[in-house]
Image (tube, rainbow over all chains, first blue to last red; front, side):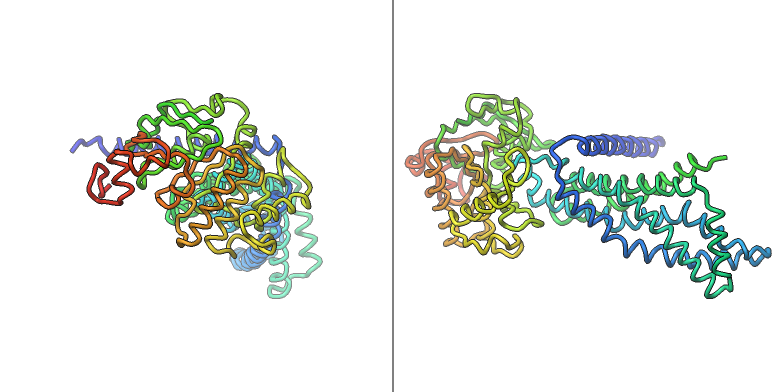
Length: 260
Length: 248
């Protein structure tokens, strides 16, 4: 056996990964360009706004409230080791707004929205509905992709903002009801500690994660294989890729906003 | 008129169309027959531009199908897909009048609904079907809705992809008769792909036998039984013996 064979395999895997990045990048540029080019489909955009934004609220709210509450408990317990229990409001606020809010909302959107977009579009491809769209003089990128991408771009930052507030509220409830914090002081500390940059970074991350979630769902849906297996694989790959890309984008954006 | 000249298409190592040439005169109904996986659907999708051929030329009314305004080109076509390909998220009437609700042919919703109901009646469906969703319809009804959608914008050319697959013989007969009536009534050019010989006899003016990526025989349906072509004879008789391998 050639001792360099494993290197060949590694090289092929890297080339394949780079090719996939290229394909996703071209797809993303194409999808974004269709947002600005007519014809527009307002009904499909309204439906996407509802699906991506409004219907994600319960999941986002529950995720945020439990995370905020758990964060308050952890910080209180950890802070007690060096008599720093009083920092709970500040750390909950900064933790939720800078990191946990955007990342958890992004991952929830990947789980809920990316999967549903990929499964829906992949099923449409398998059942020839996308071919039918073309024969009816309707561009699938304009009709299916552009409304979903735009809806995610608009609604996910809002969801992140709402998630941040609900997460902080979760920490507030736990801190004031279980840990003996004064309600007014808790709120005062939270408001005083947060900076504009924290909030802007949170919303920018939300927009980036929304874009990633919608693009990955549409990309894998449009490029799905045949049959039920193809739809299943497209759905799984879309969620995996979206989750990884959201975490990678989070690292990059955190570096951009907060690197010293 | 549709003309295909030496059209070839491969998917990886699988050369589906070798050098397919075919002519469909204006206002006639051509039925392409052939076994499963012989490239009938690929040929049809090449004409529509859903699949790009590797080589060869396709002309529609003398013009290169690959050039010019895509929307204008596609506006001349209607297509009935094998599984009807109705949009699950839209009620039946919006499926039928899809073209009339958006894009350059956009009309007021009330008018589009009237047209949809008229076309549904034309294919033998009552107006109460209009507000149902495709998942609430039987396979035969879905095919009829697909047919209504294909004719809604009164296209010059209509394609039918396996129009009777999965239907019982009675419903197949109904669909075949509808296709024949509509094509005659509209004066449209029709291209149908099928392996259902009863469809061939009901729908076709002309028949083409596709096998091995090329047209093995083509001629009027009246001459099909006496074609003398071994591929056509084996296909009509359904025999396992002949030039078409039973195990593919």
